[in-house]
Length: 173
Image (cartoon, rainbow, N blue to C red; front, side, top):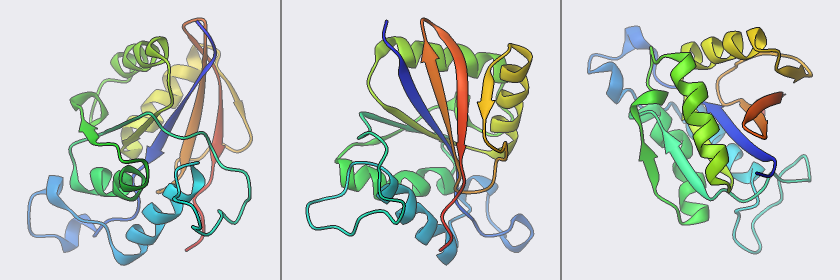
């Protein structure tokens, strides 16, 4: 099994919980969140010819799989990337708020075994719980360790082990 990078994105800015009368699952992105989602798409090698380059120059690999929590804010965060890659966004329960971090680790290892370039979108509580589990397992984290909205955690999986991770902060939009 070769080394696989899994990209785990925290959803972009959404309407505040206390300002939304509907179901929390249906909370949409704010205007800022839409811009953040577009910036995330530009980070990957998925833009059509002639599209403006990402301001940081180098791009991450082209995604082969997009998976998300079923929450609107997560699906919408991946939508510009899905359109650029012509891939569907597959919703899965293990990325939903309150999900079990050890189960997520198992799912991530299965995704790595399948290969490709998976890009996932989830929630802050899930990602922080995953970070705790990975730190306890000895995963090396490079750079700052934050889980800001519209940020990306790149998990490096080698021989079935998530051995390192790096944090990509969100673009200013």
